[in-house]
Image (cartoon, rainbow, N blue to C red; front, side, top):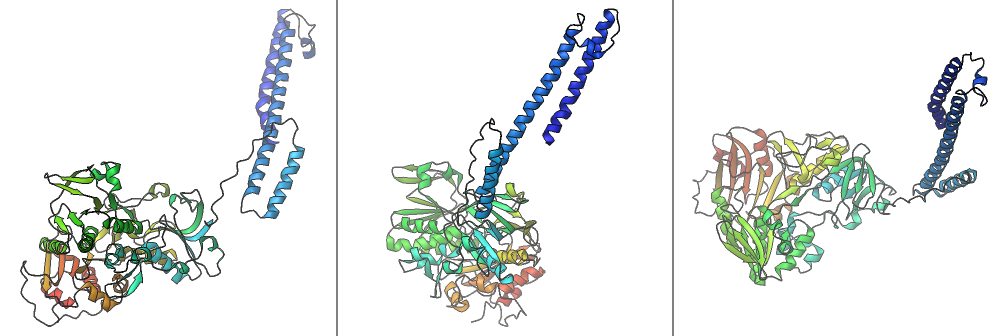
Length: 620
């Protein structure tokens, strides 16, 4: 009806203009013939004088054509609206959310509309049925956690602690339930149980057995039942990836096309392992024989490879590369394969440890059974005659059967564009405020979060403890806590059960360092530390501890240890502008709260030997 009026409003001026034009022409014609125009009707007669009838005929033709065109347009518009209305009603009836009664009611309306439709109208095209979402994907999750790692699980546990009836959905592209990653490069390699590869249960350094998974499957509810379960719960949607975020509509789109709406969302996507460009460009044969170590499937794959090949080369001298070199080095003695570790630095963990301690660590790795090649910059990699050939810039050539690239982590920020989130240009990751919030109703935790440290400036941390604490805080803030992130996270690395260290703050070998060492005892090992704390994941106990009154030891400080001596245990201070910004506890365990307080205080220390006494490293 409204469209008819619109058509008339558009066509009426044209009709009036045509009428006026014809009338003017008729008057001019009458004047030319020497007589006045008495009546408009007379000038319009076909039997009138020559010259006037043609214009009258044109007038009728224009008006008639206008009316006919308007009628056709109105008819087609009304018919089209009727068909579109029918299609819309069919679409609504097909939605899964509509109950059967509503669907029947809509079907009746559609049937009545079709009976009343004009019989000459062209039949509408068959409606396309929308793709139904998989039955296990809930349409809505009050708390949506993207990523299935440590940060997401810590957030879920925190949310449920503050909101016992909360319904939490974790979406992960991995096929496994949330699990801890550190044992993948540590304890699992030292297990004597052949079934550990499948069960992923392992013995900690203290002999106690535990699973790599945070909780068994019985802990979680089914995603399909999340909305119906009485007291809420945590559900995990595995094998799905979030590919798009609609932050205005508060919903996400999955890789299979399903959509999930949310009220609060956490991005804890972690990162993906980096690869060397020379390996990326080397071709398919090289890539098939290269492992980028990160997930459970990578551990299982590398464990199988270690039983089938004659040599494995690890590229990278950081935490992961050194841990795998020690683990595979011990295994190589029994299985009879060669382990090679290479990196561009002068020693293992050369970017973290001072040079003298890095050199000592390199010798430790060699004693574990690995051949270490320092100052190794890879120029190109190729596959020839059944072997991988790694050519270094200085001309050295290494032949091997398999490569493990352990050269760092790239934060996953694929959702930044669709979500309109800022990515830090210096450190990578999503920039968040002090409450780990990226924007309204969206938080970020774990490896992907670039946060502001009130003591050390903006940072991004890639360690287990940071994932635990940042995930826990993000979960609290998602439930309204509004707490700032002030925690100084720690990290640790074990070179087997006998040598390990814990670190906090900025530990960069380019900074000035001061080390204070003492002779180690039988209890100064990772194994002894786990026996005392009762857990192999040391951050689980230390993050709950608080440094109270610091009591220094009263024994005299021994003279500085020479470089050739064995660095049994000690404390290494990292300085910036004469202020301690980082601390490494070398075979010194369960003292992290003290280190955290020293960094938090940010004071100038005239004698760091006195500060080292706080850690009681000289006690028997």
